[in-house]
Length: 329
Image (tube, rainbow, N blue to C red):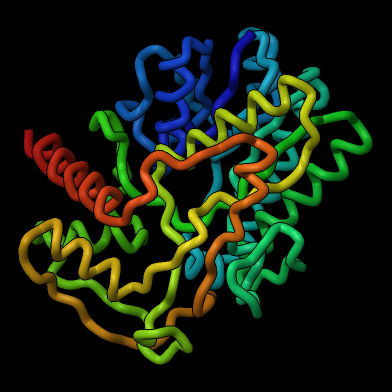
């Protein structure tokens, strides 16, 4: 039996492949390499280059590799881009996820782990926000992910497709052993952008909005180390395989940091100030969002091992230095 990881050549997906391979699982990766990298896929896994919307290809992979679980990361993730290209996001994140689900059902795959997002909550009135809160996405990105959650819920009832949807808060950092990290050159993740600016790969970085109702006026986010996030996926898979109930789970630490606090942490790790430009708000950004993260601990038995902003930032900066050396070679 194998586990199919879609988007396994990307940032979070590549870490999932590492974790599964480390535990001895048979892993197949499906990625169209539009934003991922073949070199980021651990050689213990088998990489198939293709699209999750290609149902004939997915059916063949399920059959050839005896896939009994799918961990689905493939999709588009940049909130402002979803505002300017909503149809593209509904295609990549919703329509193609529907095709992947249908392939899973037809191929007899029983367990499905989905990469969802805290963006489904929109701009919640209370913090922290728990899974019981009414979803109210304010961007097509958030809506595209919520629609996929709905399809999973309904497919579970109709076809018996067991699922866990993990609602990510802000994922950052890199594999503690230096094997993978955020490698997309033009990624918009705050910590990556700050690290690139610190290393002179960007002349400056933008701070989008300084007039939010937060302690220092900048957006407040709950940052989770990518390795802790992946540990939640591994727990979710084990939960489903032992007959656990399907559902949604927040993935965060339950504590927020502002944009300026994150930049200060990067400056501390780098040992020098970085050039930042204060600007207006960006479309689709909520003021603050912090996870109510008790459910993932209580039901999945997840416990973080890297809950420290300085550790997250230091690992991200180390990965950027590694990438610079790799790209220069």
